[in-house]
Image (cartoon, rainbow, N blue to C red; front, side):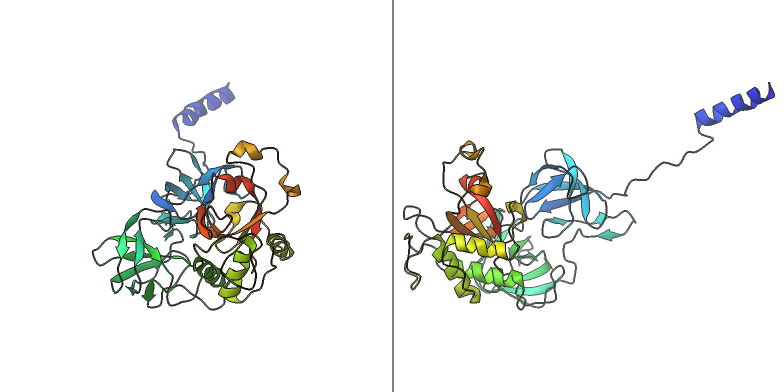
Length: 343
């Protein structure tokens, strides 16, 4: 009987909280906002093997619920969906985020003291670190700006002379700066660093853009730059930009990229300056390419990836020759076979 009384006496304690059972702690979270810089996967778990919910697009805003660890944020997207994304500053720029151990960081955005920049040539001043972001205005040659941070190899966050904050290209043809440290890089002057892959890629892109509007000609001569077909144009951009002589046809260029072990079938994994290879055009709708075994398709077109879902290439007389096109949700995306760096 005494045992029963003792047992019953414990019941109220269990019911009303005299006995505390430790509960697992979640990562602490100071709610912060983030802006997507480059397309990134929103996943169901903090792991690259976790199922992808969807892709977040450049310029999209998210609410950062917590920083799980050094590699993953838990976020709420603009459509209300919650998931996990990379903390890498090439994908997202954030305000302060509290990590599980209570320390703060700026979500990968470059810290560092502000420095001064001077605009060399008129350049777009944008709301986000993307060519798709809305333009605030043009910054004029000679105008002074305060550089708040270097977001990545391609974008500075700056404060203009009128007090407005936004983003400008790091390209030295647009802005002259004092030393600005980018995430993971040493100081540099105006966005270039000696001999890096990203610098070479930007030189290739710059060289290619000089030929915008050059007429298209199938089987164009490799001995002049009066006209181009797709592979001739790509070959010339690499030759002019960094002195690299690629194979003269698109299939050879595709084989070259594969030989380097750089081929990727998900275009979201590509970086600016990478080559992109495509199959035959079958129409503008996605359904026209459904059921196609792309591993058995032949390369019929090559382009240079600019980042932010844009490509630089030439493909017909009617299109106006060398030009820049949007890639995502168009026949280009449906025709895409693989891509990768030729560097």
